[in-house]
Length: 209
Image (cartoon, rainbow, N blue to C red; front, side, top):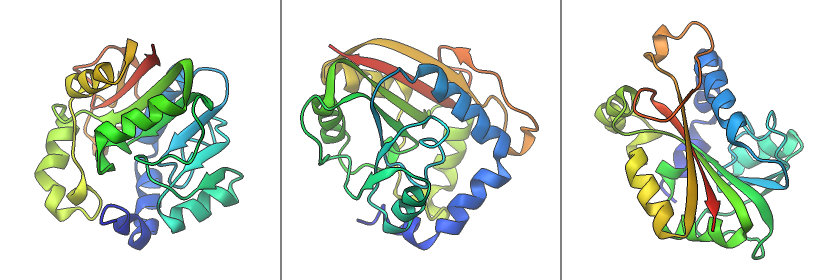
């Protein structure tokens, strides 16, 4: 539960990040939006609903009570649970979304397996994350011991996540990238480009085969 505690204790600080880094957030939102399919979706680690609400995702899973309460007030149906044990039946959703959540799960293999289980055939998993090999990923790794949030994070590269997803039965990958500057230098919404290797924020879409 150590990874949940910072989100309980520093909820306001978490929310302040989105205000301070508004253009980085909007850039990330744009990138995720481009890979969200139609249909019934759920966000795993929905937090305060910063992505689910504008993406019109009605269902969320969130272990932090404080975060869950914020999302519920915004109209999301939130269940308190963790990614490794999703409280849904098999083949329940057309897509599931993880945004900056995958680095906080205790067991990534279990989490991806569970996502696979709750998805319908040809359903999509969409993962937005900071690539550990990107400038921002390297910076976060360097300061992680000083951060109440990233102290508990395990960062992944795009290649590592692709390999894990492939091993768990996902295919037909697509990649988008954004956030090309340091956070303090972002003064407007950043472009979204295909592929990965330049931007710090990557979105992977993969299909349940």
